[in-house]
Image (cartoon, rainbow, N blue to C red; front, side, top):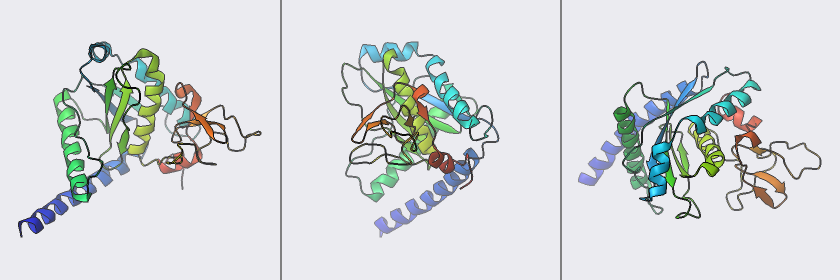
Length: 256
């Protein structure tokens, strides 16, 4: 009996959360004014390199994200400043983790915990809450050869990005942040999950290019540029990335 009551109560809570998330997402895709994105740095380890990097972190590395969206948005007739980035102070607590083998009930509970975590972080930062909250978890390069998977939640407008605490990686970090930001707005991946290769044609920046390979640019939701039929490379920065037509439709930059 208690289990049924608990599931029913959780279902009601999820319905209210889902309805609120739908309204927030719809408002975020109107593009009548800049979308405010709050970035919250988090230390992913106890390395002194990570702590020092976060302490010295300034808004400058993130202006590339604003420039990217302004440049790409101009091609789709969206406002001159579609995205505004606001860097907030470090968040002491790590985001809640989702177990790889989590069933739907634990996944739902994690989703609620993630929303609570994001709400608390925004409340502690003060001021007007941003439309989208992205938590950038920094790792010392010497400790982490391969970063954990980043994610962006369309339900809740929340992103969790794993990045390197290193100035030499700031260009790539910006690419990942922009990718996950677009996930929160409804954009889907444009790469093959098994091979990580860009899908043709929607994952190619220039699908009509002859010869087709190598592609000089990457489509943002493909994450990589196709340098060959079975080879892809991560772009060094957002200067080498575009928002393709399929992604533009998904985020309401153009009509479907």
